[in-house]
Length: 121
Image (cartoon, rainbow, N blue to C red; front, side, top):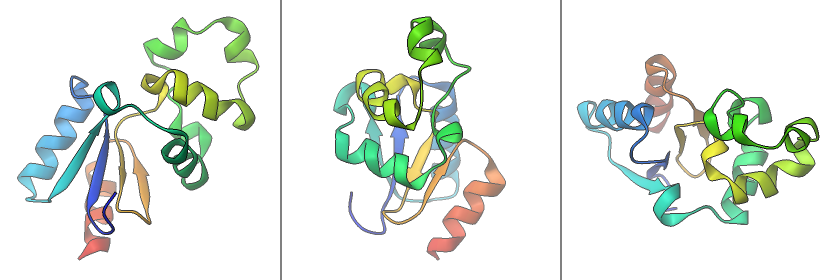
């Protein structure tokens, strides 16, 4: 990730990602898009996310990917098991995740997105 450039992490066909991309385009905010389906996620990136964001914000426990996990994986899920889960099932990461290399934000909330973008100005 280039320092200062916003990177949007997600999956291209996700409706929330589409909405966030449209919002960024409407605000004329330059960004790079990292598609988990095409580019994957490596341990370094997943670790950065885990260090920067609360686990309950980062992992989507309401999504299809989480619901399809074996009960034992769900029951034993913790900060210790999160990295392996994120690497094996990137779709379990809540979308969108945005970063400028120093700050991170999760979710599509226009007020929070605006504050995140304003921090860069």
